[in-house]
Length: 183
Ligand code: FES
Image 1: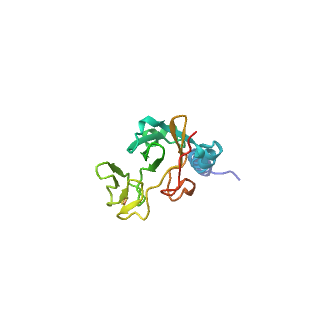
Image 2: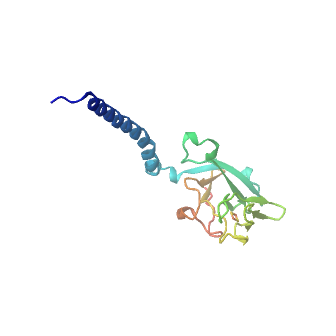
Image 3: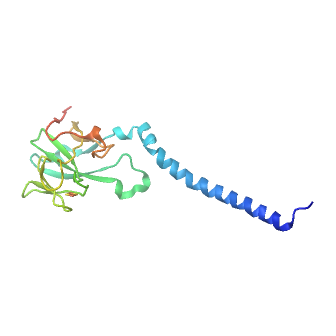
């Protein structure tokens, strides 16, 4: 018994379709697997434990709060400017520093520093923080998140691998507990 031509063509098209689907699935799988495995790759590379310099101490005059920017060590080359992360640096008295995440502790909007009133204010829902990062008013239930930091060789370093959020408890510090380590 011979197979009709129509059936052969149908078989051929079926196999071609399966091959095409397999190729597409393989192409889609690579970035998905890379995305899922990226935390493991970053952890293995030690990027979550990165200490980065925010600059020389002279950039942060005593008694003032200044904006600083660092490059996210967990970023990929194609992240562009989105990997440049701002933070607020407060030089308390020339010896003690605080480094605040720029994100409001409510829903993450970037807070601004107003030296005239010595307050951080959030433009989204009116959250307000005192100069030491503690909550003053508004919807945030806590103060600003702070980076671990240290002073070394005349520079200010922060532990920059994880942006401090409620989900990265290792980077949370209380408002008053952290003292800088001068080397
Ligand atoms: Fe800042 Fe809501 S995000 S008050």
